[in-house]
Image (cartoon, rainbow over all chains, first blue to last red; front, side, top):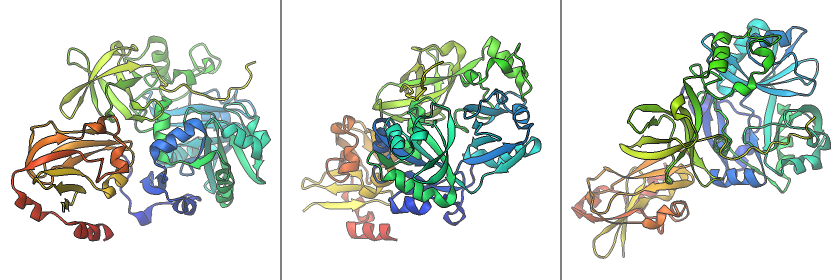
Length: 376
Length: 124
């Protein structure tokens, strides 16, 4: 881990800290914050509850910022390969900051709530990202805002009860909506593979909002442990693990997030760091690829485990691994050589000196259930 | 009456009437690990030295080792944990036991904590 070891006293608290303690959370240091890794129900139960009902996650440690000015979209497009200029009012997209080698500096969500761009970046990278943005953009860090995620198949019916306008949003849309009279910026998005919402709210009203959501019968609190196992089953990347400065978007299977307008032949082709490398790889493919790995047996395979091919050659490395509570079996992902990346390829993981068979599979492990709304 | 002893690393060993020892992890240990999803048990007949890694506990969060509290030979393992690893969370000092040992030297037990000493260690 990159984060320095901090003493309890040095950790930052989110606006929901007192509520977490009241709910019996086990707090752990994460990216400089004291964060709930689990509540008394435990990670497996929180994971399964999210897949069947709805869970409330505190993700206030993540960085929120807004960009203003006529040149904001163009400035951001010089750092990311997304179509920011074409981002319609009330729409949101996933993208990443790239470096000159085509590696990924961080992944982020960018949205157009009107007259500004709203960004959410990873907690461990926010200082880096904000410094990067400041060089090119009129940026304001929204340090006094909390971020809550309501995730699960019951999230929509909960939202319909509290804020019908938010419940009407389609996947990757956002709007300013009052929930129980509390002004919020709500987007239909998340990090679990389920339908759900991410809610940006003033820090001073975050606890009131969290209590209103937790008062709904379907909703229970969930911690970072379940968030991690849910996103792994959903095949979503965790920055610093599955993607980093040494992995390109094409290797990571994130080429879908680079629209044709930024590709060769597009109206605004390239123009982001590492464009030559990334656009080449989009056309010719990469030498390695991020894939899902299903281990044989019940023992999870962990990050860092080396994968071998049948001849004993190095096929790749796992970047995430754990237990998929929905599938009730271990799941992992990692990078393998392109010639080993076909679904069904059988590889060998060395665990405590013993070989374990595992199989390459497509991602996600659990199908996404986003609310995409009617297609045009 | 059976005797139970605890290690600094949160394993327990209970000495049965026939002098054999049953080994597991404490309530505190299972609580720290969180939901346990797999336990890799030692082979029957394996000789274990005191402090040697004997079993691997995989929780949703991480892997941890269970060390042999004393030296001895593995005579039995709790095969039921293969299908129900969560038993370790629910009943760590009962149905969630890991393996049984034929002790080399019962005097090694003297270096371990009794329940009262372990309780006051946790309270610190």
